[in-house]
Image (cartoon, rainbow, N blue to C red; front, side, top):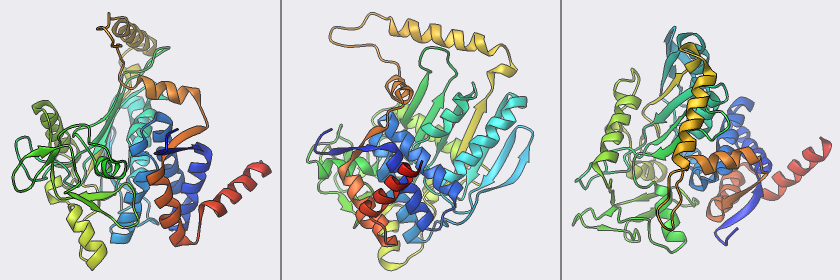
Length: 383
């Protein structure tokens, strides 16, 4: 633990989140979807996709683009596909429903895809694809976001910075697991840089006047009052390579262009619009324009044990590669997977995410860390 983080129980974190969701009008099922996904991110060690992302939910509620009481519903489907209207709910609720539908359809179809829209942020997508992994299936999933990045070579934010997860069945070795984003930084990287007084991990901030790039976001940061993760910024976001740029555009096609109810990022509100909506009551869109969840069930095409064996053999061969001096050969997602297998109760949480959640977000419902912790400990004692 550092002075930037605190060690907490993931069980308490989930309990606290569920209390706040239900205080905001969410159902038990909705609360569990949100708490499980955020807790999962912490167990992975993805702190910027942990508790701080609840601020996006709170923002959407304040702006009026989210309905915590609604339940996503299927509006069209076939044997191997479906379309889910999020009904302005959270993406956490919508993506869990989409995942369950896709997994069930893939049991017989082999390959399925479920599109989603009209919902809000879903946080990290790791928990959703992991549901397929637990069923010996592969999953690929993402959603688009408000404009947070500029086209390659451009200096105006017109692109998403989308979360993306894909996972493959495995045996004894960690799975092949891509858990990343198709951009260089989120708003969380801006706030982290400013609050912790350190440069960003690359020269990704594009000056809106000169087009020059820098790793110091000080002149561009636009804090949202009461939040420690969700900040706006006046600079454009640099995409460093044509490869990431191409993947970003491909993912936009998947989330919002071929999606029958998708809304492309170019038609979503930007951070300025959300600031204006909070301050002046102007209109804004949901924080997501579209999403997809693709599931592949290898057992339909051949023995699943053969798939697991090939995956294990491949991963083992990669790990056994001779490393360069001072380096180690890493398997993407391996550390996160191993963290999950340890089933530790202790997790790290960023202090600048913890304090706003309890002091500002929970506080607006008459809740506090002290009262929630007392109730949690009483429930634990009661068994």
